[in-house]
Length: 343
Image (cartoon, rainbow, N blue to C red):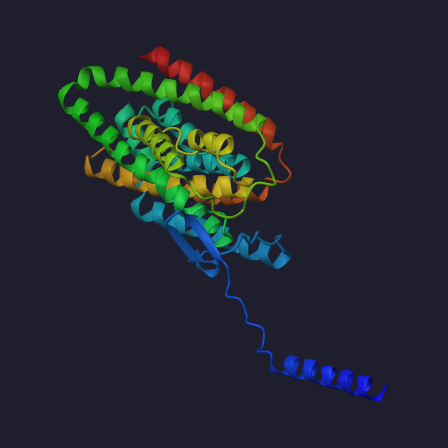
C-alpha cells in the first residue's frame, strides 16, 4: 500500500512538473482577410464595418451650423461671381440632392433630363456637366462608406477595370461624332439617353422589389477567374453607358451586385458608390478635356446639391422610401420615352 501511494505521488509530481515546464500558449496572429486567390491583407488593413452613430442633439446643432455656414458661402460666391452662375441651377441641385439623399438613388438619371428639358442644354453639354457634377458628389459618399468598412475594394477595382476604359471610349466616340457629324449627333444622343433612362426606370423597380440577403457577407468575397471576367464585362457595359449618356452608373451595377454577388446590403451600396466615384471621376476628366463641360454650371449645381443630400439623408427614416423610388422610376421611364420621341 505504501509503495502504491508513493508511486502515485511520484506520478502526480511528474505530471505537475510537466505542466509547469509546458511553454506558454502561443498568441495567434490576426487572421488574414482574403482579397482574392492571389492577394491577402491583414485583417486590420481594411477598416471593419462601423455603422454611423445615431445623431445626437449636439451633432444636430453642428449640422445646422454647417448648413448655415454653407449658405453664407454660397451667398458670398453669388455676390462675387453671380454673373457666371445660374441660381435656378443651384435650386435644381438642391432638389435633386434632396431626392438622392432621401431615396439613395443616383442623381445622374435625374439631372440629365432636367438639364435638357428645363435648361435647354445640348445633349453633349448635359452629359458632360452631369458626369462631372456627379463625380464630385460621389467622393463624399465613397469616403463615408470607406470609413464604415462597407466597400469591397477588390470587387470595385475589377468593375473599374472594365468600366473606365469603356467610358473613355464612349466619350471619345461622342466627341468624334460631335466634330464630324454634328447634325445627326443630337438625334443619336436623344435616343441613347432615352433608352438608358427607360432601362434605369425598369431596373429601379426591380431593385425596390428585390431584397439583398441580410446573411450575406460583410467581408470581401473571393473572386474566381470566371467571376473576375464577368465582373470586368459588367463594368465595361456600365462604363459605355456612362460615357455615352451619363446615366446608370449606380442603378445598373447595383442591381447586378444584388443578383449575382453574395454581399450584405450595406456592402452592395458602398461598393457601388465607390466604383461609381472612380468611374465618374475618370469620365469627368475626359469630358473636361474634350470641352463638353461648363464648370460654372457644375459649381452652381454643387452649391445646391451638397446641402440637399445632407438634408435628405437626415429624413430617410421618416420618408416612405419605397414609394418615392417607385414614383421616381416612373418619372425616369416617362422622361426616357419623351427623349426618345424628341429624336
